[in-house]
Length: 464
Image 1 (cartoon, rainbow, N blue to C red):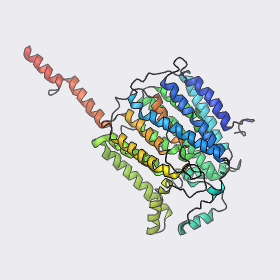
Image 2 (spheres, rainbow, N blue to C red; image 1 turned 180 degrees about the horizontal axis):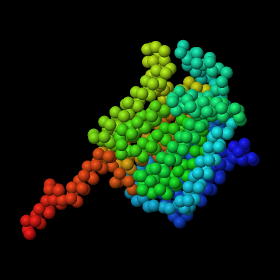
Image 3 (cartoon, rainbow, N blue to C red; image 1 turned 60 degrees about the vertical axis):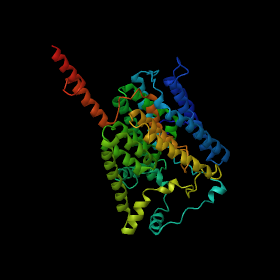
Image 4 (cartoon, helix red, strand yellow; image 1 turned 30 degrees about the horizontal axis):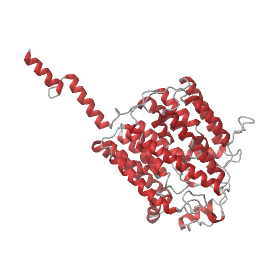
């Protein structure tokens, strides 16, 4: 960033202080201190100290890391309760922001430009410092198919493969070619720069998705600008601005809400999200129950086609025979991330050095009980239920996820913002029910025989 603005230097803690003041000035309701909006703002801002403590603990202080994970765990628990109670909060007063629409748009665009410059120009992150006990965790032995690729890139800088869920795809390849020409400056490796460029595009997709939600679902363009601006101002967005695996699935889920009236389109978007990370898989039962008997078949068909193309296409590009194809297809699911130990020399949330892994078992049981309850109840769901329960399902994964559970706030941040700013959406029902209700209202207004209006008109005609 200093190559663009001379003398510009903002640490994560400084960004938290500045964004805190700016968010309070724009969004805080000073006329109603005890309001749901102020509570939600405080809850979103309270996640940043936990992230800062975890980042400080990764430098070698085990105590700070433990406190940071505990902080995020507690905030996530309060947020989960808030989301589960959202549909019961029937009073949704509309609060205008402390800044007009033109000012919100200007602030949103400027913040996005600053974050984009920071993501592209910042130097690579330092390797995480682990303790002696954590370094004793050994990686599994590589298979024969993995020996050659590892030997070929032995001289390249170490990059986490999970940071680029689009690796090897038609979308990632052109960006990687461009990154090779741009990465000669500032010492940023091409593969790291490619991930950051894709992450910036994903953030732009989230911003455009929030604007579309405000326009199409909420019927309030200013609400869309308010959500997009707050998304960019929150410190957790700045901290993970270059992490593609944090934001790419969330962007697809946001656009699935924009296209909720088309089950096939939503199925394609959620299928792509499931192909990038594991947690969108837990949203599928809820979305299938939302569409009901008339719409879930289209949703499932589109989802299945996308999953088959993703799994089969990636396996075909990286396999040489039938056995290799089968191993690559199974490995695409990446179920190792759900294990109790990751086999990687990175700090974990459920590590014996931080917390006992045995406590993860009842949490997993409670999570699946919650998943079952929000799927089957209520039977007839609206977009209000779909939005709040989808956010709750993603927040719930933070409690038992192995790799640094609690720090992936961008997975659910756009959905939480939609819950915070949404008006009453009880009229937004599944497309089949909306079509049926619209047809019924049309028959009633036209006085078609067989409807209540038609039969009443016939009785009046007889009296005449």
